[in-house]
Length: 314
Image 1 (tube, rainbow, N blue to C red):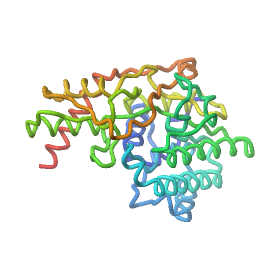
Image 2 (cartoon, one colour):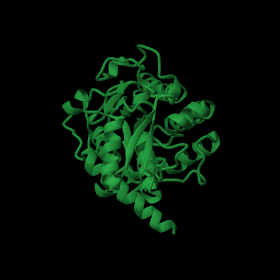
Image 3 (cartoon, rainbow, N blue to C red):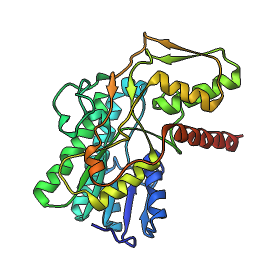
């Protein structure tokens, strides 16, 4: 289903890592009626305000890229907020979209919805077949609820809403705060700081052995538009690259990009999280989409963006 580029498209969370990439991709594709609101302009946790916003703009497409997100430390220490905020954002946005009968909605979740010990690579059918990783189970439950709401709307109202589950993301507009960031931007920040301070060692959180898959956010944005035009099923669809590497290997790539030549240690007293999390992307591949940005290039471009932000802060 081809989307008319003149259609009003609301990108929720358009200033964040994912939303900003989707906004850029839609602009590049010629979309001329993009709708966005910052969190100060519209708090999606406010139900009445969310309903009023959707009633005013009546988008033909909604992309839900709005969420409270964070790395393993933030998820571990603030599960209440990760559950409550994300549930409210999703429910309010989808209920408001349903009230004005938005024809097409894409809900973006996370690969953390799958069981901690799911068979690798993880197929979409693994959902709800085992226990979640406890360090981010609150966030995962919220995202699972979002998938269920998409399916419920399809079943009850027949609207062709869809949900996609991206793997670990990185890229421009990422969060580089050491207490709330995900692993890749955190490593970029830590290795950059190590170079600046002439540190002799950077110590990784955990053993360095967990395997992770990383997708550049511009690839996710491209996949999102592809899915809006080519995917129409009740179940979620995985979005990833189909290959993974250890955290230690990732650290080596980051060190090379940043120019760090010191030692790289590990701290096994810190949690590793899920041992491995590689998505089966055969369903997406069958739709004719594949990623274009390899990890080395993506890390280098992300680091260049980070350095530009640092220069802008001076």
